Length: 141
Image 1: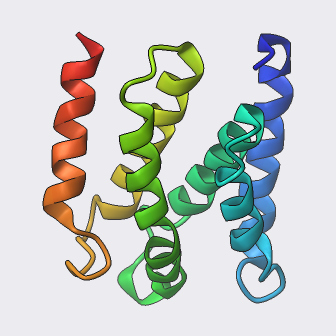
Image 2: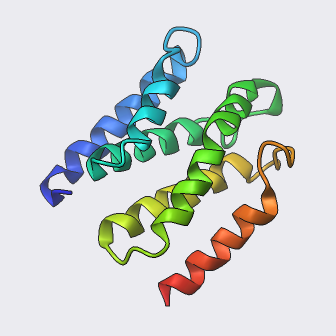
């Protein structure tokens, strides 16, 4: 990833969040599938990072919203958390800055999505995700 792209990446992520405030999911239904496609693009680390950044902004949008406005968040969790837990698990052995940045985005996304409620265990095997969090902490040392 090119460090020179950071300011542009941050501005684009904020624009995504701002537009999603009014257009997601009613007028921008293909946003989540597009982000998921980018996250699954194992050939391009930049796509993965940008997809995770976009997903983080999308989930953060619901972080402090009342529960009656969160149904889109539940769909996001259902569609992405199995993918995120697999991605986190596969990134653990890698010792690169890119892998660490993506793991950080995954953990922050998990926090934003679960800080006020925990999804049902059939959507999110909580013990598995918790063990991945612990493994990340040990990996950092």
